[in-house]
Image (cartoon, rainbow, N blue to C red; front, side, top):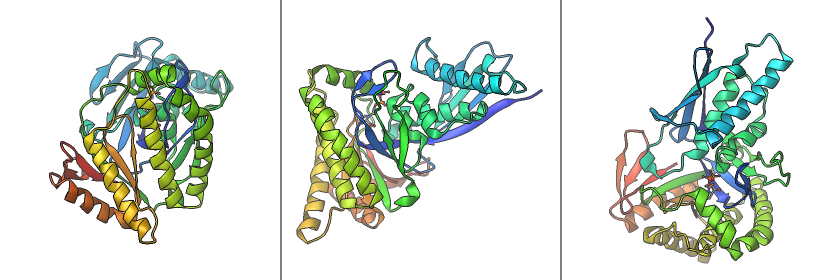
Length: 358
Ligand code: 2P0
């Protein structure tokens, strides 16, 4: 008897130009394009195994060993349904292929990073799910084509189909057919850029991204300015900076866009706060670090960025990493180096968090 099973993994990505707002909540179509860096560490990934079998009665999914409900019409169900649709196309073209699209699937997914690392897992999770089903179904799809489907699991998940520097083009079609991820440059183009993850707090965030961004769309006038007048130029300028390996421009735009994302959160009614006092202290520290460098005739040495939570990600050229880690440990003296069971080199804690050089 044949066993139909495949495993795939996908990494976490951290946006430099932030996705915040949907123009279509069902298809997950964004109000602006975004751009991210995929973290390439082996220890920041979701790994997913999918199996199709005629004896399975229904589609089921386990996340970190715990079964999750696949709600009808929900994001998981949509991704599985879309992948089965693509499989049917393969079966129609090649009638000798087994009819896997008619079997139920069992899917088991694991994140190899601790939940306490404070990283969103929906991006790597949906990207790994779609990749494992694509391998199971032997789909001839490109990463951009698969990103159309992982996007419907979680918007940011479309960007985790690629490594390196990735843009999610917002598109304009009402059916979402041109809203997908494209590679700006592979990681090998600019391997010198590293990400340092500073876990400020691993508390679950107060306002989820999904509901927070819709409140912003409904109430923030600043978001409209951002969508029309700011993001299109930034997308172009940061893509050029990446291609030119111009860290100074990359860093400036990354920090400006993080700041504007948090400004539109504040401009939301009622306001949304994701950063805390420790987050703001890290901004002050990076700003001062850059100021000293620039005043001495140098360039920007690091860029902070914050997502929908208080944890900082600091992008920096490799040569500055050691200095940045020691600076953070010096200014946040409760940070003590330790090696955690996941093999991450980390430093306990910024308040209650830690630093993970990537
Ligand atoms: C980003 N974030 O570009 C931005 C920056 C958070 C801040 O993508 O509703 O979890 O599942 O599409 O993808 C968070 O949004 O939201 C996010 P859904 P998602 O990375």
